[in-house]
Image (cartoon, rainbow, N blue to C red; front, side, top):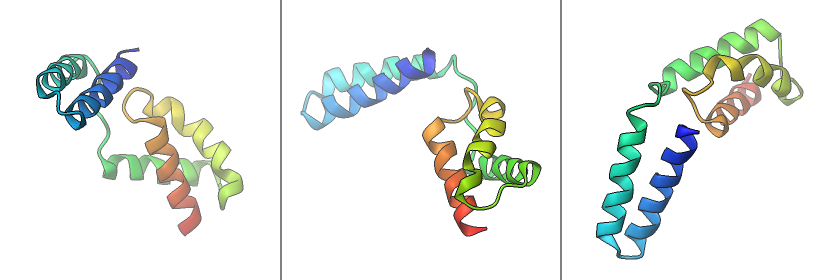
Length: 98
């Protein structure tokens, strides 16, 4: 829930900034920063890549047909520490280059 609210604040801050409402944008960004303080630290790109590689090795997946198995294994491990779209993109990238 907190991650969703923090994401909403970031999006609202960007929208207000683009519309020239700098004061409202700053307020939304500040709220987002407060919420982010309660969230677990996000995984770095290198940490996420290592976890994706480990999940691919563990499941024996190869090619895009194995994406579901990898995501099923990986999702509980990264819960709250990486956005699902970011995880899926990394899995997709690793499976298409392997």
